[in-house]
Length: 402
Image (tube, rainbow, N blue to C red):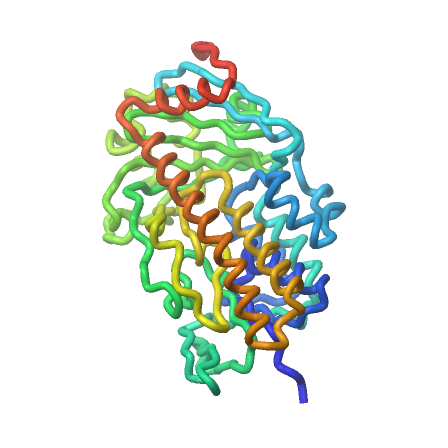
């Protein structure tokens, strides 16, 4: 009879896969349940297609998890150390910042990071096509029972870890506070290498990231590992903006027209940036949510814990994936430090010590993310961003576009 793994990890994102790898190298048994239906042959394609843009992996957080997982050499194959640069413009065509952040902040595509982790975890330890419906405490002695959308169940685990993102089903068992809308939607699009404006985008953005701020709006452009660019066009709109049936995101021409309207990036925006949107493709909505910072902490529940967005969902701040991977590292360390999960006492002590650290760090992450939304999406944007960088000692030089 096959023995039930000690840990069930729900979700194969950065935090779930980082945890799987860290448990693997520590010899602690686990299984990962992932909602995506995939086979070993299409995992990479699936990851690249759904995973979004690029991440800067910080030396003190995300890279520590990679090193502890024994994956630094693989990471260095994909990491772009020359892409740690940042440019800031305003909507009228004035550049304020052209800043190199240094080699401690290399970029890597989300899909490439996922591939590194998937290649490092035995294939039989990932159960694809297992969308979690709910978790109950209906097992013997109140142990967790996983109920999946296909009607199957799983139980007998020493610990269930929710790494299932913003709308975590595991979280409902330990923390009932739901995410709340940040007031901002991004519309994601892309510029591929064969796009007519590709050369112009490449000349303006380069290998890193460019931000353009205007009244209550923001454009973010990122260079990916294949040379293409992702564009995130953000504005303050109602929560139901992408679900009210008024906008067809599969209609490329309609989405271009919407983004170039006065509701988003109208005639008052310099035409160079409008031309990039005018030629964008593959539009997708991205509403931003967060949990209140004060709700990150919860009373510990035996046999269950959270990592990543499940634990401390915040708006984009450049630290989300790094903190998610750090969650995995701290949790794996605490489990190993207390001798594994052989006894309830050892398990509960490991989880409590992990959660105590995570609560403080996670609430700070949420506060910073919300603060960045308040800073970026203001009437005088990007002035507040410029002021922040001045305080950090980053050189500021106003320069009009040629």
